[in-house]
Image (cartoon, rainbow, N blue to C red; front, side, top):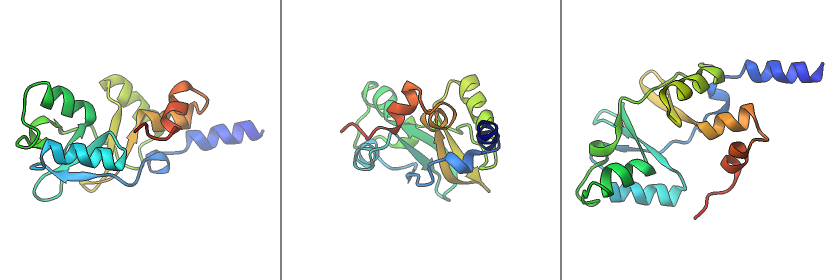
Length: 150
């Protein structure tokens, strides 16, 4: 009986229940070095990229900085995140289900989804967030719950 109630509670939860609410965002003209420093200082692996009006333009990850920026020979002090970010990322609303987010991540082979309300990011959900929610004893959930590795 208790197990069924717990399963029902999990099934009825949506992204606003598990998303990270504190997101870092920068303007599209922020340099790669500035974003890399922000990621290091905040112990995060992604930053949202906004246009001049504050609307979500894209997302940049630590991997983007390395693969699309440094490995391509771009100067981290001259190149902007707008040049290397993933533009028009997949977005979901805060009322989207956890299962919907998992399906989108699976179908699109992505690890993070900005959670957006009325055009503005209100959070972000990662594959680790989903693992901690859906399978808390999995290796991914345990790794995702561990402190940052500095």
